[in-house]
Length: 413
Image (spheres, rainbow, N blue to C red):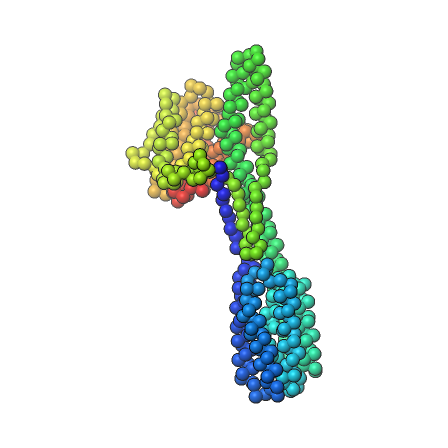
C-alpha cells in the first residue's frame, strides 16, 4: 500500500478575508456612534435609523459570506454595494444640510468594506469598478463636491485598486509555489523509484547479463536481452518518466493541499501501518547481517536508536555501497563497516580495499544512467537531511562516509 504525505499551505487570502470581516463589524459600530453623536443635526433621523439598522443586520447576517473567496459570491457583492450606495444617496434625505456641510455620509467608512470585498474577490479591475460607483454616489450626494470630497474619493479609488493588484500578485505567487511543490514532490518520488529499481531490478538484470555471457550458448542470448533491458530501464529512470502525482486544491477553504503517494516500508499486509515498526529501531540490527568473511562490522556497545524510516534508509544506503564494492572492487575485495553514534549525528563509514574509482568515473556513470551513488546513496542521505561523502584514491580503495544529523535521524523523513 502507500503512505500519503500531505503538505498543506494556507492561502494568503484568508487573513485578508478575516481582516475584512473585522473591518465591517467595527465600521458598522463606528457609523452608529457617529449618527448618535450628531443625531440632532438630522431633520429626518428615522431615515438614518432605518439605513443603519439595515447595515447592521446585513453586516452581522453576512459575516460567513466574507469568510473566503468561495463564499463571497457575485450576488452578495452586488447587494452589499447597493446597500452602501443607497446609504450614501439617502444621506441628504435624512440631513437636508448634508450637501452644504462636508460631513460624513450615513454609512461613513463602512462603504470601503464593500469596495475591499470587490478587490479581494476579483482583483484590481473589480476594485476599480466598485470604487468608481462609490465615487459617483459621493459626488451626487454632495451636489457641489468640495476639495475634501474629491480627496476622499480619490484615496478610496487608489487604495482599493492597489489592494486588488496586491491580491492578484499574491495569487500568482501561490500558483508558482504550488507548481514548485509539485515538481519537488515528483522529483522526490522519481528518485525514490529510481533507488528501488537500482537496488533490485537493475542489479538482477546486470547479474543475468554477466552470468549469461559467462555460460555462453542460449544463456548468452538471454544475457544479451537482459543487458538491453537494463540499458532501456536505466534510460527510463534517468529521463524522469514517472507517473505524475495527484494534487487537490481546496479552494473553498482558501488552502492548497499537496498530496503525494510514496511507498511506506512500515505498512503491514493489509496496507495499514505496522504498530511494531512505530518505535525506535536499532541501526546495528539492520547492518549486522552484512558481516561475513569479507565484511567486518564494527559497532558501538550501546544500541543506535533511530526512527524506523531513517534507520532503513541508512541501512539501504550501506547496502548500496556494499553492492558497489562487490561489483566494482571484485568478489575478493574486503570491506569494513564502522558505526559511530555521536550526540549530534550518526556516522556510518563503508571502506574497501579495492582498486578505487578513477577520477571522473562517477560523473560518467551518471551520464550513462548508472545512478547507484547518486540515488541509492546520496539521494537517500539527502532525504534524511544528511550527507554522503565519497573518498577514493586509485589503488587504495574507496571510503563512503554517511552522516545523518541526530535530529533528522530520530524523526526520520
